[in-house]
Structure formats: structure tokens, C-alpha cells
Amino acid sequence: MRDAMIQFEDGRLYVELRESVLFFARAGEARIRCYISRQTLVEHFGARNDAANAYKFCVCAYDRHRDAIQRIARRLIDEGGLTWDSEILITPDLVPALESA
Image 1: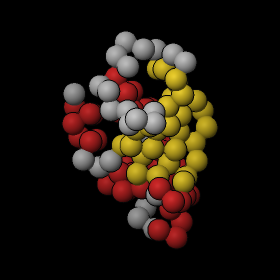
Image 2: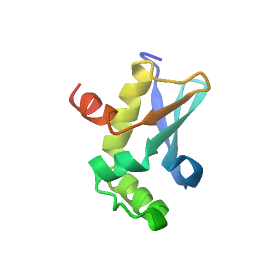
Image 3: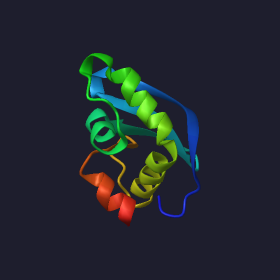
Image 4: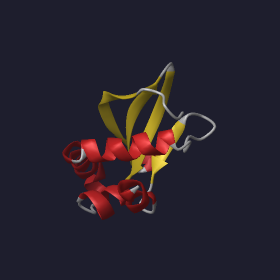
């Protein structure tokens, strides 16, 4: 997807089955599902590690760090990190490398 104009939609939601916050990006005509795992939000973005209220703490952490998370997602999309079904997953191990690159 290199050089594609990537824009992010405003909405986001917590997906319990994936233990992740889901948000969407658009690159040209493609709509890309972007997930950031609960563990990533806890380890790198200050979400409280409370499984019973994960949706609340994870969405709040996403909202507070939206710009940084979207920069990481943009870099992952640019570097071809999409799965076969047009999604990305931001995991704890990816954050340091993508933030510093």
C-alpha cells in the first residue's frame, strides 16, 4: 500500500472476542480493519489491566493516544502489514519498532 493516501474513520469499538479495539482506515478504495490488542494498550498506552472492564479502559486509552496509534497503523499499512483479508493487528512487540522507525 505504499504511497496510498491513508485516512482514518472516526469510529472505534471494543471487540471482546478479539480482546482488541477496532478502528478503520481507508487507502484508496480499500477499507482496512485495524485492531490494537488489549495487551498493547495496557503495556504501551496506559490502559488499566482489568479484564472485567476492558472495553472501557481500552477505548479510553485508544482515545487518549489516537494520533500515536494511527501513526503506527499507517506505518504498518505502508510497510505491507496487511493480512489476506485486509486487516492489521498492532501487538506489543510491534510498537517500539514502528514508533522509532
